[in-house]
Image (cartoon, rainbow, N blue to C red; front, side, top):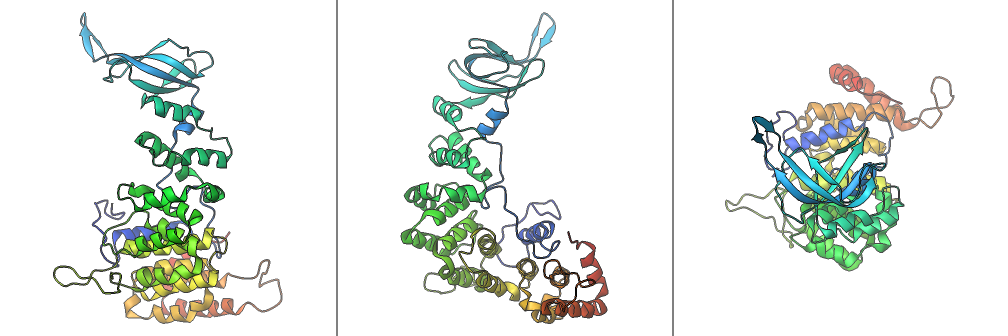
Length: 437
């Protein structure tokens, strides 16, 4: 959806500013990249390349006062009986008690719920409920014998992370989709540090097959790329390189995780591939470097989503990879995109957060360049200078502490003075949302 209009957005086929990139800009701004100078991205509570976290079956079970395996017994639709309208209902028989709701749930007991569900004898469901004065049951969850055993044998949310993830890893591509989806959700909820801690236990050969398999749900590709990056070998690196290099005009969900896993696996020597294909090239190329064209002979553009995925990979390496790639080298890669007006505001935000103060003069030149005459870029430049001007040594207060400011601070203050005279409104607008802790 277009965040400005609420209308469905079009497919992203180029590196022009699109609803997707505008949304990205909003995310960058709201995430506080320009609010606290020098702030490092805090450890994300969940897997960086997974779908939004959801409440897993183990979490639902742990939060329930009452839980039971039940069998479908009978169901009646809403009906008239002796002039009285009776609501629809379904009756279930409790076959196994998991949590007894402080004695309120017993094997063999029948539970009648006021909603109709068609079924047949032997259909199994998991019922979860909370108890105040009586048990209030939620909607029955259909289960099989296999999925039921998966649920009741799963480690509780309070168990050690390594124990939990090792258990759920076995079910990531299980044939029962309910089980596989829940196992994935457990990883989606897990912090990166917990996933990295079990890297030696990852079944790398299986993960490599999943990445290669066109039937693998696209939503899982980011996680699998990350897992292979943590556990893979040179053969796996070649596989990931091939996937990254495959030219595509479509949005490839999870390719940011594959790029990040690739960089985790090969380190700095993987950057030239990412830089050339995703940051420098504006057009898609084949394996021989030949620019691809459509049926009308028009060059095919690199989708914005591919370039943004590469940016996400650089951000991941900066925040999570513990020096796997030197930070000056990551800054160098990110600076490549400064020449792209459609991305410059996002790049300036990252470089400010990464304390790359080497680009001040370049930004001042950019400020007057017609190609970059975009309000978002101008505000980004001003905020960059504001962040830089506040980057004083820890504990230093220029009003109370003797000694000169760092050179980059004085340079930023001079640039801000110039910008205030040249474009006071933009500076004022940028300062409105600039806060320091």
